[in-house]
Length: 75
Ligand SMILES: [Zn+2]
Image 1 (cartoon, rainbow, N blue to C red):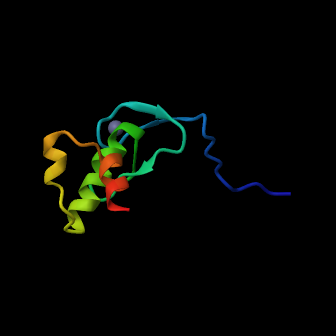
Image 2 (cartoon, protein in one colour):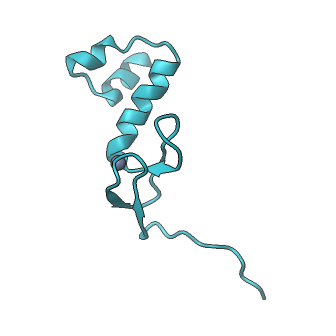
């Protein structure tokens, strides 16, 4: 039996490609802000960037709305 698969356990410590802080868990796709993966904290920024790329209204964000609030509103 061969085991050539590299396992990434959720408990592994990874480095966020955006803010360079360490986090555990699966992380999030950092695109389009950066390549690689990012922490949950930076994922909000990534979501905003994606919304921006979709030309959705993001003016509310500058008034202090969170990404999750905007997403709820969008749905
Ligand atoms: Zn981060």
